Amino acid sequence: MDASIYTISSNISLANLNHNGDYSLLIGDIALEQKSSKLKVFHGTNLQSEHLLVDIPCGIVTVYNDTPELTSSVIVASSSFLYVYRNMKPFYKFSLPPLKTNQIESDVWNRFDEKKIDSDALYEILNNLRSEIGINPLTSRTLTFLNLPLELRNEFAEHYRSEELKKLDVITCMALLKKTVSDTNSASCLVLGTENRTVLILEIEAFTILATANLPSVPVFIQTNGLFDVEYKLFFACRDAHVYLIKRGYTVGRLCIQLNSQPVGLIRMSNNNIYIGTMDGTLSIYTNKGNRIWNQKQPSKITVMEEIALERQGLNLLAVALTNKTIRFYNDRKCVDVLSIDDIVVAMKFGRYGREDNTLVMITKNGSLIVKILKRKATFQELKEEKFLNPTKLIIPKKTKLFVDQTMREREQFLTIHKTFEQELLRLKLNTYKTYAKAFKSSLNPISFRNLDYLKLSAKVIGLGPVFQIQMELQNNNVDNYLRNLLMIFDYDRRIYQTKMNTIEIGCLVPNLIYKFQNHFKCISELNVADTVKIYISHEKEESPLLTVIINMPQSELSNEPQ
Image (cartoon, rainbow, N blue to C red; front, side, top):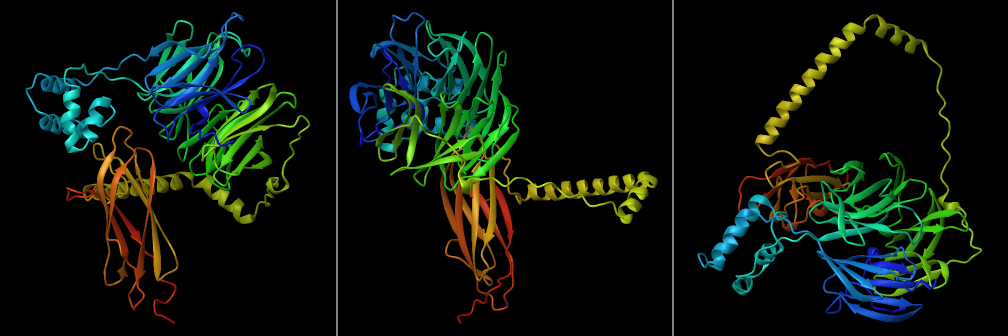
């Protein structure tokens, strides 16, 4: 059904709104092609009602009251607020506690309010402040003002001249945590992750803050386990490609899992294993202690993940949607089914819809709504092409005379061997420190450690020649600062190599994302010699580079002369 819906999985909820066993579908439409976001309620395939939202939603949950005569409450997280709907009518609005503003920023706006400085001076001071402390401590008003074109700055500043400067936190993710018992309709607590790297646990009835904690990075996915009044575990997948754990009594999240790429899905199954999909197309399984026990590269990139809990069959499957328009279902480590869809699935929700227990709701990239109902007699068996090879037992060879003699020598001359090892290790460390100091002074290092410029550049050469392709990956590891106006400069011997791009302009680097670039070099030397190519990363207005990478080009194995 073409419903023109654009949303994410956290904005989908299946709820028993009227306590009659007939579940409805709630979708928070972020409205890419509309003027305002909406909360849409579907019953069957029909749109039952629509409710306008003030801002883009980031999560929807349904909570149930202890007394059965009251209907369910729908909570929508949007920007800095929680909107509560009861009987699908606005009931309550909760605002996150305001944050402390930067003193210099507040003083600058006060000076502008008192007409001591104009909008041009205001822009210059705030821009310098952003360069010094980054964007995270600044308010949204200041960031909006700095990003406006010149002709709109004065009008924007005059509009907010007499208004008080406030810094509001923004909700990034939301989940429910059972409070006392784990029944379906029992009382729950609300767990929020914010842009300020803060975790809030709220009591739903009075919206009081029960517990708070801090995270090293901004959370994007939450998985809860346990009861708030007994013992609980909260897993947070963050933008820095790490997963942090928070338990009762924790005030700071503890590192649990380190990922190789940014997460696109976090699911904690009933067997206590954690399934994580990453942007590089890898699906991995981890234990609660952070140990990886399995991983597999998917046929294409992962878009969304969802747990499929089949109570009658006693199965817990994992649905993984891919960019090749398929959904793969995993039972533990085995792929048991593959579902083909006409378009890329960007959001999924599994649960009871209407009177059907096992229903999978999908939203595709073009805005279509798809509802699939599982057959009651459906069985899931491992696909033949997905069977894993059983690990063979290693054949350990018998001990040889050389092995026995070497063992006896190590026992008799252990002191001499240890001294030699210590001397060589110290010599290696000394040479490493000298090389590092030399590279650090001349910026000949692939990682920049300058203040606010934590860059990392890696490069590899592909091809046999005479044309080589250099693939580069550039990453900004400073979570508080967006790097702008950078140049990637290539330095090489023009008698040996030729390229069409001597420089690459880099407009903006978002923190923790990997940006990929490529350039082609052609070996034009008649002697077919190999040389080095240096890659510099620098600001447009600075002469010294931030970092340098030296690539040893391979010798061309193919002739550069036309046949």
